[in-house]
Amino acid sequence: MSFSKEAVGEAYEYTSKICRHCPECQSTCHIHIAKDTLYFMTQSGSKFFEGFPDNILTIVRSLPISDKSMNKAQISAAYDGIRLICDNCPLDDHDEFCAINIVLTALGTLKYGAGFLTERDIQVQS
Image (cartoon, rainbow, N blue to C red; front, side, top):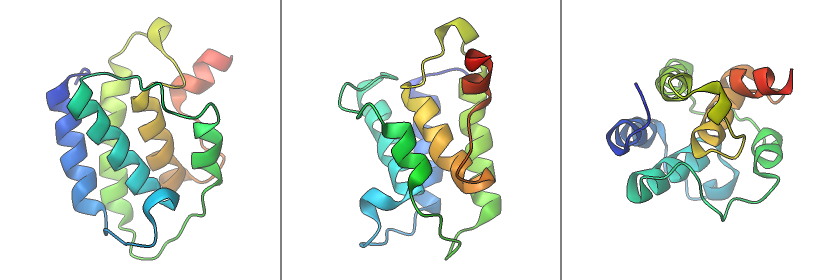
């Protein structure tokens, strides 16, 4: 699946379903950050947003990971769907501040832990 508003819209719908809409989590929830980032892309059709802070990936990786009410299978399925979009972009076009990469980092951190790096980030660093 390649990047398109439709593909991102599907991913947004999926993260909306796994989001618990907890009022206390908003800016400290990996799923909420992923969902908001996907929503931005569905509205703009763009993978880039100038408003992301320079340390967004550090922020995402440092958020507390709560197992409370998390369905690992749903998180894994959402991650896999987003990864398909990322995998279909040429490696030369990879940018760590791409919204897809930020979403992958948010969901991957829940799936794999705080030290998570996307496969593309690892490849670019090598």
